[in-house]
Image (spheres, rainbow, N blue to C red):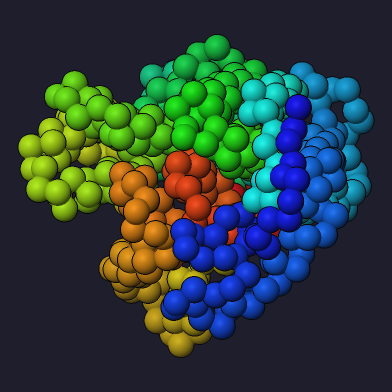
Length: 476
């Protein structure tokens, strides 16, 4: 049963305000944009959208439209393959505008539903988190058997796994050069000639799926989708069991329609990174023994062996330890992380690092660095120089942005969670290459940070990225 507060609550922001502030009234240091956003959100938050039934219904319709796109594959917004449940409806390949309209409408409704549920929660709505987990599990069970929507990343995962399963090195060759047409033809043009930019643990996952799928790329993608969905729900179960506020944590992750659409429907590896990150954070908050420190380091190392940006989690966990002069704990965690990463990359050699650093120089809209590169090219500066400048400056911008984010969160919140969140959210704001599913780690860390004003900004950024970069693989 759901419960709603029997008396009017303080007008909310996107969810809760920081400690000692209201979501409507500004706090010290608020700028004009913050005040405008607070006023606008506070007015919208009392609309019918903040009623739990309305918010849940809007979220469900948004997810349903996304699933319809997957069920009508192949079309302009999906991979050019069919998974088991995609055979139930006729393909929309001949009328691309319909699939595009369905996808974008679904994204918008999912975004509105998310906002409505968070507003309802801030006004006193306390749904049973177990019921939310079961509802999400039902949706995920269907979604993993539909063709991936919004991105072609799952196809490149499958292709790299096929290369590894056949004894090749995905870090020195690429899907097109490997010559397996069944796999390479479903990979987007951006990645056909690109060696893998993912870590060895990601390759192990991909190889496992390809060893089951064999020559059938659809089966390999299906296995990847099932694994991804299982990990997504596993994170939801962990949050339910370990969070101080399981309702809030469940709304932010398991029942978050935007994350379900981006992570599960798209089949992205960032789900695995988020899983390792939240496990490391929860261990760090509860265990301070030698065993705990080694486990934290191994988890961080595995996360980095999927996608290298997970190093931000390690830095975020190390910073409060260094501030408390816990040198030995920091050293143990760092050593365990480095050993884990070294063991993983050791099987492929230094060649595995070359595509990785090449990927760090990429830039895409709406990243501000893409505008910088376009402006530089218009002035006649060569791309290599612009990429070098970008790669030198953006890490500094990340630290500056993280510092501002930390200042916006109350100092009484747990640093083991707040610092990783600040770094991963800052990375989303300033990194040259950023996509909506990259927000997974920021969302999963935010589930553990009570009462903060950053929720609205993370939700807005995720929503904007989802709308700008929802594509069937034409760019990603």
